[in-house]
Length: 146
Image (cartoon, rainbow, N blue to C red; front, side, top):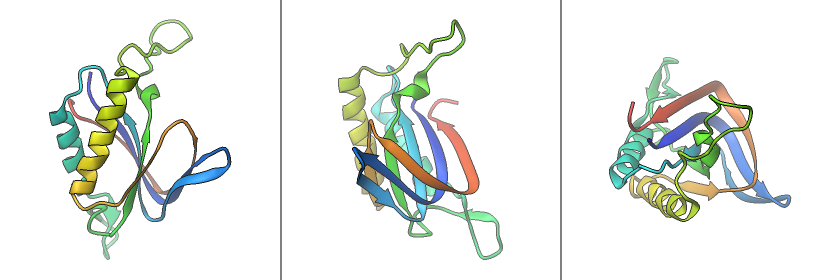
């Protein structure tokens, strides 16, 4: 398996638990992060580098030439094991490809730490309501082993 991230360029995003905001950003990236059974530290580092430098923000000419770092944006990172839902058979997703919760949590925290080490402001959350305003809309799927 591989580390999977759904990336959404947002003008704002927040997570709430029981009606209370636990994470909130303005301009930046909402990341839905899926950790797989076979993911390793190298997958986390590759993804952190890729996302920190991904040029999906518009420059003065209207071209996608700027990264979240260059525009001073923030990241809202949300743990999302359902990205590993295999829907090929039957009508109920199979999540066998997702990492076990204890391993996934440690790797998710390490991934967020790697983003912070690259100078990014990172808010986090899991098992909550997510609200966002998708800017563009721009939505990408990035995985560490294409």
